[in-house]
Length: 387
Image (cartoon, rainbow, N blue to C red; front, side, top):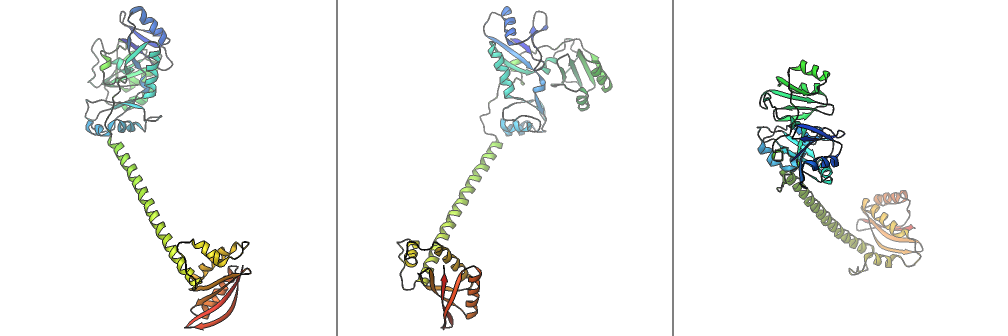
């Protein structure tokens, strides 16, 4: 297997040489392919790429393994929503299982695919994709223990790496990281550590020099942080089940509301038809309403005798009906001729009749009162309205 290290996106690639136990630089993937061709004649070349840990997201959500399992892969992605600049939909998530409250690591699928595609164009298949802080896992002198309260810090001109226990990260500003690692008692330093970082470490805790370089790990394709292997979650997570249930409930509520609207609309339509029939019978007591014909056509046949009749007639009738209802008045014996509407109105007394005439005039309807009679305790008056 070929071990390749990418310290950062702008730096040259590094390829591990087994013969001298050193890293050799290469400007691009094609150059790596050329270097490998001299040592390996096999056309099928597999590789492990140690990518910059700066691209790695990690979080500790204070959830047990059982709770994380119930979330599913989609639910785990949304745990990174507050710390991810880009969308979390393409995150590949790995869980550190050997902890009571495990740490979650994630890598965006777009970045992963970019590295895999770049290598494949050079004829190299990446079967292991690991964060580069894992290169600090081996100490030839066996002084550094992953279980002790100690950490190892590595620096060169292209990267700064920190490893503590089984965790690690890429360092951008060391003092900020040191404030969070208050339980570390000893720091092992290696590489080309700057004087500034050396002073920061000395103020923080005890530091000890280490004379080893970052080295590849054994069996990287089986490592739990291997992002070249994608775990497929065939089960639907509870989060998605809740979302689907809410969507189904919203659809059902929409159908119920539409059904109620249709019901009340049909009910209002029937009531309107009944009221129109009653009104028609009041206006034309000597005429029978034909239920098979359109009501509007029957009204037009009764009221509009000329093809050139004023279109304001029906509008006036609607206004009259509203005013009559407010004044507890009904009309009968309607007729239309010479741009005048003749009808009889029936009210409880003369005061309501006067109030009706005033309201008609206020609405701009020219109403002229004719004969007024009192019949069976009701006031019946003839009314002429000019259109």
